[in-house]
Length: 314
Image 1 (cartoon, rainbow, N blue to C red):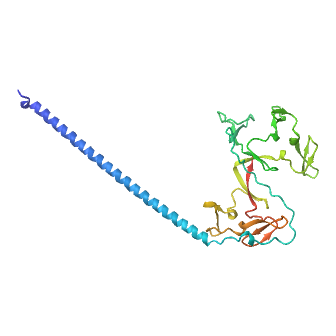
Image 2 (image 1 turned 90 degrees about the horizontal axis):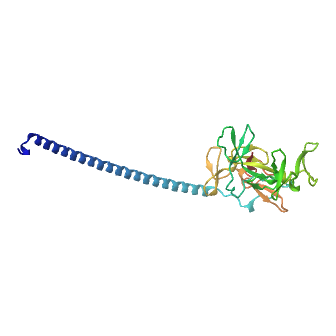
């Protein structure tokens, strides 16, 4: 009997044909869906690109407008008078020169490759080390900072040899030309004492010299790299944040701007920010204000010339 005449064979053949057509239909539908998805993604990408171009053009236009506004403001701000138009020195003889301490600055050279920013101290055992302990329990990370000498204004990363070292027995020793010694060299053999009136003085045990001014060997202090404050060298006032009302705010191209009492930004500095030092005949220095044309012998308190940035002592 032929396969075509077999009802079971015919049914199987028809079922196979139907399954093939279903697969072809599903494949066509999946292809159409994939094509639609690809087309939608391409349209979304094109829309994003167009939006990005519009935003970029808007940003460029805004920057051009801001640059034009800045040029207009700069042209509208009156320039301060040149130094030749500054007022002459105040009447009367100049007062004695009072040296202004130079604020500490980190060393100009980069720290050594093996230099670590912190060191570690164990509060229970008193052990101090540079390497970070594996277990930080009980350990405190402390900033190393840098060393500054108030007498010479020198800065360095390493602890000064003039301060010596502490032996296990608690005594201090010094290292000179690679050799350890209990006796401090003459330049480092200074110690601080108090006079009967309370004033500090300094004695050199090697030479017997006595001085009122702190010698360089004892003028070292460790300063923070991260913590700074501002100090008025005339009034002694200290503030944590920069006194922007006098110093202004940094702007592009190295310029500074100020904010007036109404909250409006301006390129014109306040009178307190216009004090400049001027050298008179004979070498005496006085202070002149380029806005008010006032002249004084003493450094003006609260002016930009009086505020000095300090690195906090550790």
